[in-house]
Image (cartoon, rainbow, N blue to C red):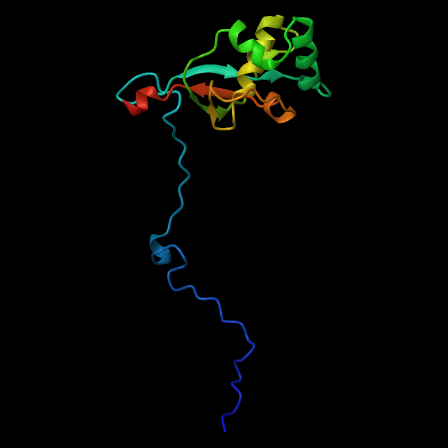
Length: 154
């Protein structure tokens, strides 16, 4: 008859053979990559910044309520009606969060509605003029830079 194993029920000890990174500790290193092609206007690969979108909000300001009331005040029935009234880019752009807001809610109504329309056509990563306009608190509080990636894919 076999005796029960003394290791049964114990956890396997942690192993540090290659420290989990594929090499001995003397060759391990970590580097943070701090470079981007976005915003490059010259050279072989170009992804220039085209537009900055977003609102400079004061604490407690709700852009969703403000933009919806402005839409009605300007005579539009829905955000979709703005497409034909305002000139929009005709192709998708890449989006990246920006630290600098573009527009105050006290700006000219046409500029506020243009910013809101374009933010409603953005996800966190892409502006797409063919998607439906979606205004949420999240989409209208987003501040993004839009980049033209055509220079990258040529």
